[in-house]
Length: 116
Image 1 (cartoon, rainbow, N blue to C red):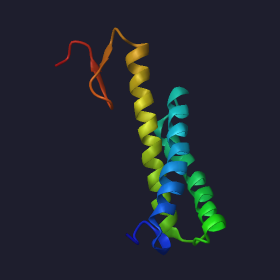
Image 2 (image 1 turned 90 degrees about the horizontal axis):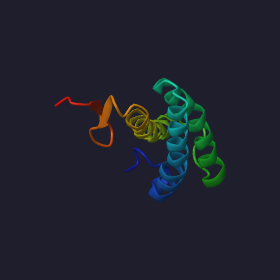
Image 3 (image 1 turned 90 degrees about the vertical axis):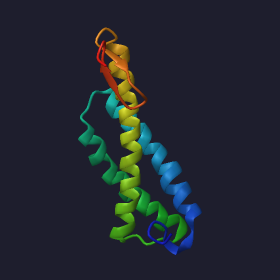
Image 4 (image 1 turned 120 degrees about the vertical axis):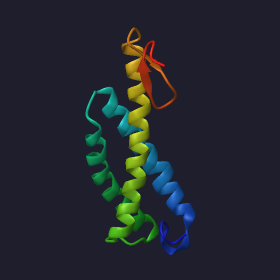
C-alpha cells in the first residue's frame, strides 16, 4: 500500500486525491470537452492541479512536498479522472448533436448509425 500512500494513511490519499482532486479533475475534463478542446489539454491541465494537490498534502497532513513519486501518482489519478469526465461528455455531445449520424454504443463510445 505504500506505493500510493505516504505514512500508511490510505484515507488521506482516498479523500484528498481520489475524492477532492478527482472530482475537480472530472469537472475539468467535462469543461474541456464542452468547449471542444483536444484531450491533450486535459492532461496538461492536470499537472498544475497535481502540484496543488501535493501542496495540500504537505500543508494539511505534513506530507512530503517534493516527492516526485507521489506527485506522479497523484497526477496519474487526476489524469484518469479528467479523461473519464472528458470521454463521457464527448460521447454525450456526439450522440446529442449529431443524432442522424451517431448512436451510443456503450458509456464510452459511439458508432455510425446503421453500422454493426
